[in-house]
Length: 415
Image (tube, one colour):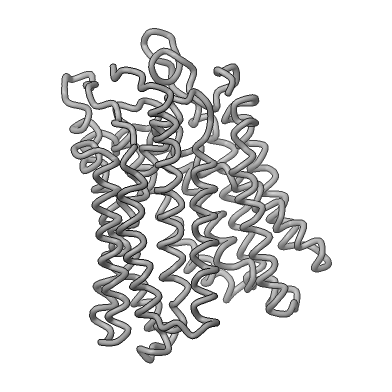
């Protein structure tokens, strides 16, 4: 087994992991904040813009399943470093494409998606390693850091638009900041455990690459994450639209409802770890899923706008911990976390690809509000399979890694 690193190294790695999550959120929101200006500059209608943005999804779809063996081979620190530089290059290419034309924009967005996909898996693998060494739940706080990064990126983007800063200058500065800050900020990552072997005597990295897709528990964790990712993505994409169209609310209230959703989700992720350590993963995510079901149905069926806002608040709280708990569950055995996180992320990402068109398709037939009942159905599925996030017992009878209960298991070592 890999030796337990000293406390100072774990604290430094914790800070470095926050840098990775915040940096990823900041970079993503920065370019996304300038999409309207890109659309106007390139003369794209809504359908054409959707096709252009598919370049991001295409890059991520390629990166997510391939990232497991890459991280197992090179480690999460080198992977994040390389992806930060690739993302910076992609962002700079998009900035140049604003001046040149469509082709560089598509190439840059593909690079952004590729970098985001592998970066996402690598930082979750590192977050799981830190969580294992801390012996307490912290993964959801890393994801809260990502949310804070997106808020910062969106605010900087809004300020750039308000003050007349051009897209090339804004995105060029963002590219420089990402390339300079993230590689330095993440240099204190822990080295993941890499000396294990599978039951057949294969190296752990090869096990990750070849077998993680055939593990029933890993696939069920992926389904669990997919349900929560769908619920989160549907909230991001459709809450404002549904409130405006379904309740006749003014656009400002639609934006406010979206902000309430993000705030509730971020708060749940930040304050959730002590409850995970006290009550355990399964009990808490089931409770939150039920809360999310109630919040979604209240949002859909509320007789008045104020009650719809209460539904948004409960919806955001209810979905807050599902994704990070799924990442922790995929990493319960740190020897094989890279491949398993890659698989779970790939399955979960399907929700972000399929969710918007599914809600839109149903919305054309039963209204957007009615279509959002799908969220409640999927969260119901997550409650039924939530037991899958329980750490599997080791052969020696211990739970989690290195003979201790895994973070988030009731009775684990207190913070």
